[in-house]
Amino acid sequence: MATRLGGGAEFDRIRAIVKALGPRGSLLGNDVVLLPLGGEYLALSTDVSVEGVHFRRAWLDLEEIGWRAAAGALSDLAAVGARVLGVLGALTVPPETSGDAIARVMRGVDAAAGSVGGQLLGGDLSRGEAMSLAITVVGVTSQVMTRSGAKPGDGLWVTGELGGARAALTAWTAGRAPDSHARSRFARPEPRLAAGAWLVEHGATAMLDLSDGLGGDAGHLAAASGVALSIVLEQLPLDPAVPAEAELLGETAAEFAARGGEDYELLVAMPAGFEGTEQFRLTRIGMVSAGAGVALTLAGRPLTLRGYDHFA
Amino acid sequence: MATRLGGGAEFDRIRAIVKALGPRGSLLGNDVVLLPLGGEYLALSTDVSVEGVHFRRAWLDLEEIGWRAAAGALSDLAAVGARVLGVLGALTVPPETSGDAIARVMRGVDAAAGSVGGQLLGGDLSRGEAMSLAITVVGVTSQVMTRSGAKPGDGLWVTGELGGARAALTAWTAGRAPDSHARSRFARPEPRLAAGAWLVEHGATAMLDLSDGLGGDAGHLAAASGVALSIVLEQLPLDPAVPAEAELLGETAAEFAARGGEDYELLVAMPAGFEGTEQFRLTRIGMVSAGAGVALTLAGRPLTLRGYDHFA
Image (cartoon, rainbow over all chains, first blue to last red; front, side, top):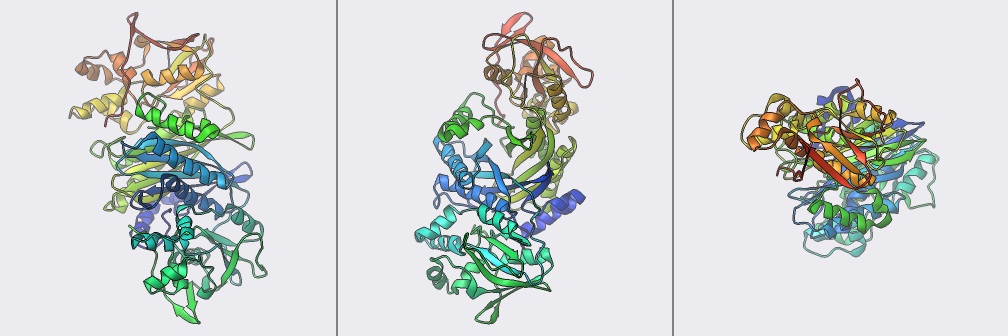
């Protein structure tokens, strides 16, 4: 959802902003801002979802548009192990939009916030040509968790299952109705606030949420931490809809999942001795070593992924 | 900038949202959310500015677009006497927008935040058809200041001067170059953070910022406080450009200023004994009494104002 520091034109634009702002700009480029306040840190993040860019009205109902936008921003809080205080939603809608439609979108925002112990606190409403929803999430954390602390020897883990959102997207794009579980992964992603907080408590050294896809986001973690990551693609936890959709595209299931964005699962580096948990689904998919970059292997052979792009 | 609970379709829409959300919705409809945190209150507000609705590219340069959007949101913090912690900016731009243009908008946001001791903390970037900018401001305050505490006997005061933004707008709309002072009131409004904090410290009973214009916003304060306000229009502090623009429209200068929105000055009720200050410009314009509604007088005669609408 948020513009991550991936490749391409958006990356160049954000870099130009960072450069133009000078020292203050060093705070930009992170998905979450951590602000010291009264012995803790306020965690803040803002995300825009634009109709035709991040979602299509034909695919999602209005509550799902609200849920998905809020969940994408809440996922940024999960990635720093913060607990949520609340959500603000600034909605822009075409002039003919009904009050009921507006209420449905905001109800979706509130429901996503409520699913992780927060609520919709306030908002703004404006008219514009396309629907768009700017979500700001506010949380609190007692520790600074970043994507930059991974150390050689750490294990690399991921929450939940991957590829579900992309499976829904490829079905829709091909004019098919998506598998219902995959559809729900796209329409109502579950921000991993509880898992994020647990992982920080249990020694996570670096963490981020998978919004651009494992292929791209692992590179961000490696670059920020100054380490190399090796990922064994067979170990990826797959959404049940992935194999069938992957086959239609002529990709292996693991490759399909690694290229799939917007699952909003957490990618986390845990210290060497960490052996997993039964608290939530957490799968070891690789390890951290000295060096740079991300090495993916499938059946023992290196694999290069193309990056994930937004669909429109 | 924010959608206030004025009349018309937007009001009905927000009411539908509030209704649909149930008890939680009671937090919506205020411009600022106050959230208890560590013995103080976090003050949060989010505002969207949309090209063609809130600003026109032909009127403002890119830094001014950023400044104005941020200042409008920061003004919400001023109205509760909060100090600013920082600003988040989520910018949507057409695909062809240059990185330099994006940086200019964000520099304007940062400059407005910096003018009141804050800074741009983070943001998001997306593409869309029109430019739009969602600003979220985060502040802290030790007291709960609302628009609902005015009491009969209080004096009614306003900061700064009124009508400058509208004077610029009427000139632009008529195809003329606005007076430079008035233009600056529209393009770079100064959020009254210092005045707001001072007024809260000195006993303010109710306060809001004038975004819809004195005519409309005074009604909000009266309704929220359950009191009547009487305003003597001759006492309004006028922007120097007002008399000439008012004359062109066939309005009195005071009426023109009272109908002018987006000056982002503070309207505040102060206890009976309060006699003003030399710290900043503050003018007594009326008083609070038992009853309901707003009575405006000019030359001793009652006057009814039409409401202020956004220009587009």
